[in-house]
Length: 369
Ligand SMILES: Cc1ncc(COP(=O)(O)O)c(C=O)c1O
Image 1 (cartoon, rainbow, N blue to C red):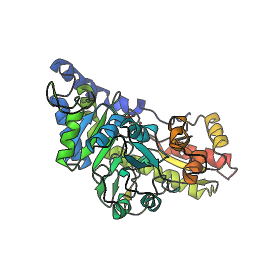
Image 2: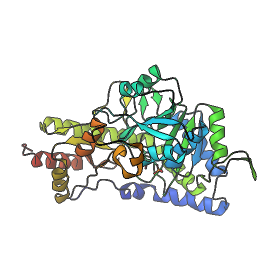
Image 3: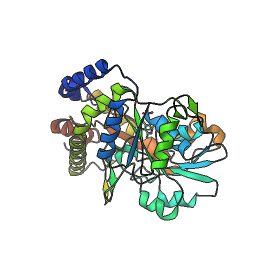
Image 4: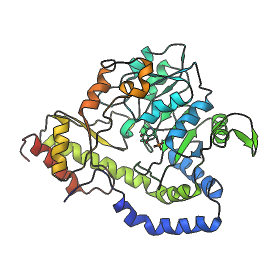
């Protein structure tokens, strides 16, 4: 039996009827952008995340851009971020006219190393943009210990994650989420969210998402068109009550992978860790593997899907060449890009499928399975 890296079909079998009913209601309402369905979703998700304010936007990339705009980030400013992430993180900084400044990750968490980050802070750094990669939060406490400026959390992959009880999206000045269909909470297209504990910042994002108009057709500032559709909000509202259960299952799947790989003594790979005090929500279960590409090819032959997130660090991407970085600048990020492999991960994955993946990895490295 083949095992996909990710699939929504098992989840859809469960949710289709309820989603169909909600969509019928939205169709009948005739209100497709913002409106009461969106307002209700914003209230519900703020409660689930534990954030004071939540503003629905068109996608996670816009969430980041709007959060930076709300902080007044623009040309001449620098924003400190990680090179080991999806493009949108640093892309959003460039979009404001500011300059991304990269800082290396910790190899065991794949997140910004707080000690290195704090050493790179200069007066030109106007904000930090850490990413809670793969569902594990960056150590926000360590960052805040040495940096008092604004922090925007890229929590696109980390809904439900926490650090000593503090939820992702509530520790920084603003938090940014993506509801891209493959995320832990996924829409039927693009959708995103900005959270904040600060009412004034949240209000700015609300204005910025409608072309900077605090009153219809009266524009105080330059914003963009970035609203969440009522259809997406309705779908997300149906899915929201399942999120805690799905997260629990992701954590159980991750534990089974780690136990299986450890018990089989597969020393050629390193399993992801969850440091003390953190809740990892395992958007991805990402190992570091020697002979990564050969392993991925072998697993593919066995019908097992895997993905490399991410094959090229941002400081080496052509789009950022004017920033002047070169190979060797961020050794941990570059080691990660050569060795990471994300194994199948979704809540509906069966224990027997996890075991099959573990045994296939063991077989590749020649261990007794
Ligand atoms: C870390 C990270 N940041 C930002 C984004 C951008 O989100 P979206 O695809 O909704 O624009 C994503 C997801 O794709 C992501 O994984």
